[in-house]
Length: 229
Ligand code: HPA
Image 1 (cartoon, rainbow, N blue to C red):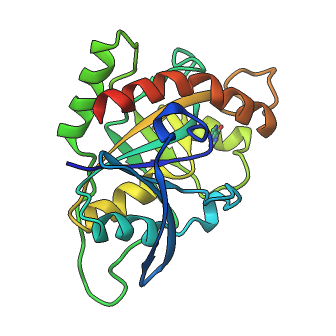
Image 2: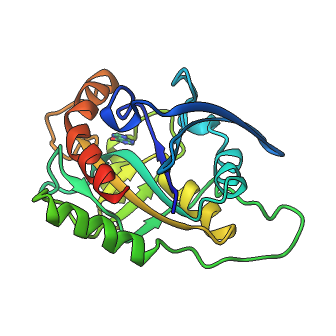
């Protein structure tokens, strides 16, 4: 079965994507740039040029492109900040739930349908088992708090969020919600690139540092994905 993968910038240039064929799929929501092999369909959520910021990602086009290609299992790979001191940078987290209080995307603009959001437990277990077999340590549970971005969070926002969630990012909940609306299975692997703003009192967050650190966890992420494929 072909696996669907969404990723940010850190997976570019990895062995995983070597030899994949570039494709553009047209959907009624817009066109989607993909990398395809027999084993997977990879969507770069920030686009081919990796210049689409989180609040402008066309999630509806991305998720419906998976459906159009017959992909039913999706693993979203996201970069996050940690809301907990014991979830250190470079940790890998497989969230079991998420919070997204604003900007909830939907395919149901013209009908009354209310899905119950969820992350797929079968896919979560597959990810956790793949990491175990590879001796890669991961955090097997966690709540992901989604913000709309593109700015990072204030210290006060993080102080609030840390009571309810473990990691913070800008993309996963939107993908999970839309996948569930289309009846597709979705789970997530989040790589922790930094402590969220104010978790370490003296630290001021710098986006350039976050991007530099994202590449540090990509080896483990790539290994788990290769195993799953
Ligand atoms: N906040 C939101 N998104 C992120 C962060 C963060 O601290 N780090 C990586 N993605």
